[in-house]
Length: 292
Image (cartoon, rainbow, N blue to C red; front, side, top):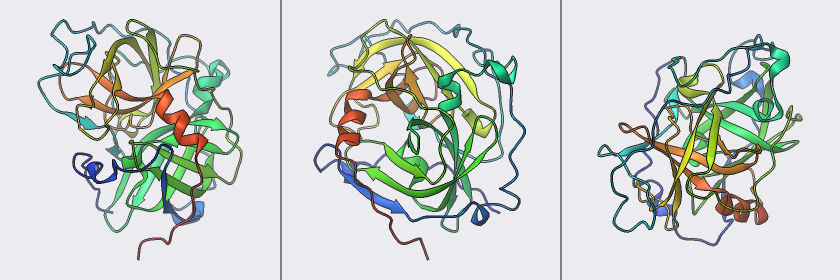
């Protein structure tokens, strides 16, 4: 099967900036696991839990964007969405899965890998996280253009997706599953502050679960231009496939949803939890016809 390049976020999301907070557009009908790949009912072997060692990256010292009242410094290279094609794995010094299966904590058990079987154009992967027993959050660009979605958990379970809805105001998607998710994480009551320690748990490059750490650089204008509201800028390193990962504070609560990272400079960007909370408060996705 031919593999597609990651969905180009720039421009595609600008057309969806209009609409009230929490507005959703349905994008996917119910899809069985069997429609995604042969043998998907057989769980994959569980992987080792990721390490909790903080990243060695340092906060950049350059000035913040002129319109952003924060110290967040965008790289000179344009950020890009962090979905990736399937079948790619990579690890670096900031991410080192290690330990025993029994060592997975609630946050790690809530993380999922999302595979998007695109309409006639290959498979792409991203990340996501559960917010209740049957609801997970990821990015719009991870799920859109899907003929079917596959969700796999930390221990290799394959879950059937019933519906997926996308936000019209941010790069967010709400996915419902038929089976219960292993764990879920709470949402923080407010957005993070500059200097707060944060971490990202996800499946970069379609590979094993990893955990990366850093700090909040501040609130900044969306470097992609997709959101009218400001976003959370951090120095946590992310890669393609990290799209949809939870940005977590020191207590394990979600303070944002990763959606983009700079190609140079080690910065990443997340939709603030305040935007996600408004979306969930008005969430009513409906199934849409599959692509023909």
